[in-house]
Length: 168
Image 1 (tube, rainbow, N blue to C red):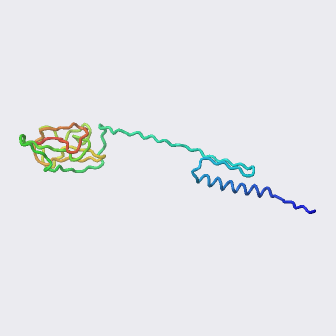
Image 2: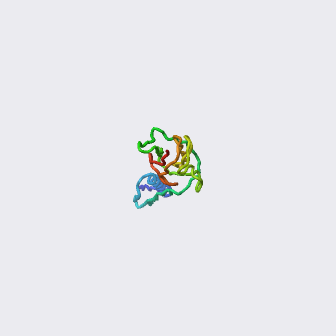
């Protein structure tokens, strides 16, 4: 009687299993799965991924209207004389804001205002500065006259077409 004996190389079997486990781990890491358990011929593999949830909190920052920003860029903005309203009962003309921003009566905090009530102004003379998006825009007088009224305070937020001053 002849018997056949099957010789198993345990090192080779272990090596094959390890290759398969490494391939399984690679595929698991590239997948969206969070957990995997496999049992083959008494050999158990359990893979688990921890999911960390990232919570980001954004707190809006309210800009301060009293913050003075150094002048980094200046634009000359002319007021269109056609947009100036003239009332038939008074000889004054309105100077309106050509853009939304913050009104500054001088070019530095605590500085002398560009104009005051009663001042005589010439066409093209700077009346004030309006800051919009960190850009300082010089607003010039569209005509000659005398400042009769200044309707806004220094560092006040202003809107488009808001009456800034009246000139006679």
